[in-house]
Image (cartoon, rainbow, N blue to C red; front, side, top):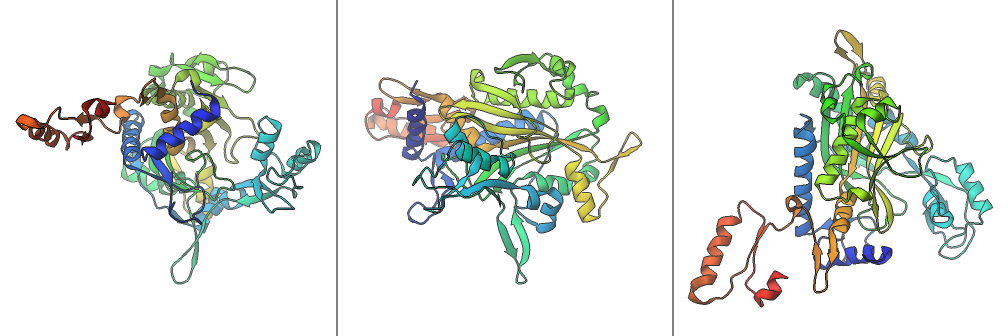
Length: 438
């Protein structure tokens, strides 16, 4: 296997050469960082990836899929807490004015994880204690402050204050009651959504890993917390082995869904079931399970709305990468939207009026695709190969005519024409047959 950083660079080089992905507006020197575009091979791969997500999660679990607006009014984010709490810690160099995300800068310098919810005062102490300076000019750093990552949008002639959504799930919460009633659902049930979200990242980097405009595939499971262990679907997965990294363990442990709940590692069979589904999904799409874990988050690491949190993480050449945030959001979202909107979002469950709780699987699609590319990368003596699962292969069929005489090329073209509507097929009659195969 390639060394760590060189393997990452090799994946990026391959992606650029083959037009998997490339910087947006790259012909302009002033194009901002954090925006990437997909070429034809990656579009095909991404579409197939989402179809597997739909098949293995949405259809398997009988979820409802919606497609919400990317621009939402200010009050949505007052209710969700994003206007107040969706912030990252930043620090600025006093000499060259470079701006850094404080927790990530500390991690790079100190070599250990720094929770993003650590107070600004505690981050200031770490900077002073370890004499952390600007990595660009070695100048001193200003005190850490908070930066809200949402993109503000003025809508209409009157300039109504709206925002680009920082996560797709808010439209799921806002639409919950309509979906619940019109689709005649009963608790527990899930609503899913795939689409773009936007975050004004302080330091976008590492291509698809940290973007300002990115794809999410989110699932929000609505349930009665009193019945989280009375969950018939979970019986099929009682003996499914989860790869967990609990807070009190230095290594990955393998434990069944049933045992994880009985020992108190996971709060309920409902949560264990959905963690099993997401682990199974990543195994199907080609992630090496020896480099996969479900890591339990500490109080300092959890999002401001989460009571319980597990991150799907995958080991890559640049370290462990979070692919899915699995959060027990309790009734935080529906209660908040009910309070700010003035609409009653409670429902009846077996005669009891409740505000449903929510467990979510919030997936980063772009970084998932990058990890799949890296885990499938194989460098042979004469060629470089991506050993992708067939279901994700951008090209499913290739037609190469051996010769042009005796109308064999015409026959090959007929074969291609008969396949192209049902498969992602290519036709290539240029160069030697050996080169085309490789």
